[in-house]
Image (cartoon, rainbow, N blue to C red):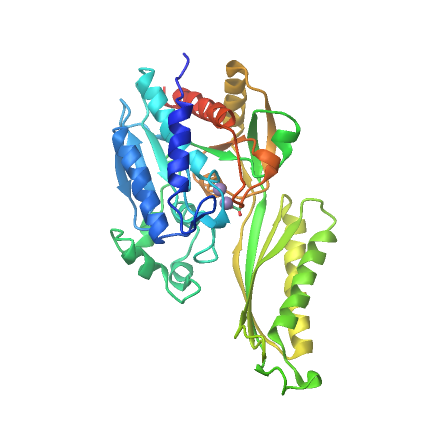
Length: 413
Ligand code: GLV
Ligand code: MN
Ligand code: MN
């Protein structure tokens, strides 16, 4: 059965959603629970309702849209991704997996398919770590991996906690931990996403079937030195927080370059200083460091090396150091039977495919802990992502949606 995919309609919706942004086009910025994020959520919820899906939201703002199956006693099949976007992002990261899922469901509806199992589309809260420094907030909670203390301790750059933002977003219920799902609530989870790397384009392949997701970790460092007048404080007496941070950032690079694993990547993506005046010695610095590897052992060795280097640098420079491990996650293994299923679907649809790893993390990292899970990747131009010039063509997206729709059809039949 050929499932009709309306690529023009989907592209129009991707373009419309991209205009709901905190910054002018082509920049997409939709930080969790910002005005733009809330408007984006409304946009998506309206599309769900237009497709006759039943919409509900949990206490942390994960959105669930259900196409009820004939046998309500069976566990549903789930799909979905995220619509939040880091500052200065593009329009496809996450969005393809949400709007693409809606198009897949509409295509299945048009084809006359009647699902036996329910199909549920999930829009996960805060896949991006921008607000609280912690990515995959919604899926972490679904998988029950966050302690009450960790949830209560989450703070954004202005000191606001999750409760503050939850209330502003008008979310129901108070017990965020109750979002946790029992294992195997879903019969399977399938996430469609752009690759965010160059492999598919370089190899001229339409579909990537993800077998593993690299293990991410991140650190937040608060460095406290002594500020003062840039003219008055002589060099030998200085305790400059920026300079300690700069040395640490170089150690971060070195830890990745010398880990012995080609897959170790480490980034100091946040480096804020205070007071931030040209004639004032920086008294405070905040660094956030992102570290990943496909192999846990080399990731963990690099992590320890960075932590030890930060302690030594701060001791030597007389700088106070507060170091917090924001997350230290294991890699995810996708479900072997789902890998085979998607591979078969690609073959039948006449689409080339390869099995691959995901170097970016995704909500699948956590969904894989509570149900069989798989990711479908499509190419993106130059492997570019987390930038406004991120691009996948309508045909590449339509191919991914076709694979998603057929996979959902088989799982829900
Ligand atoms: C997800 O956006 C990631 O940083 O991998
Ligand atoms: Mn992203
Ligand atoms: Mn993403």
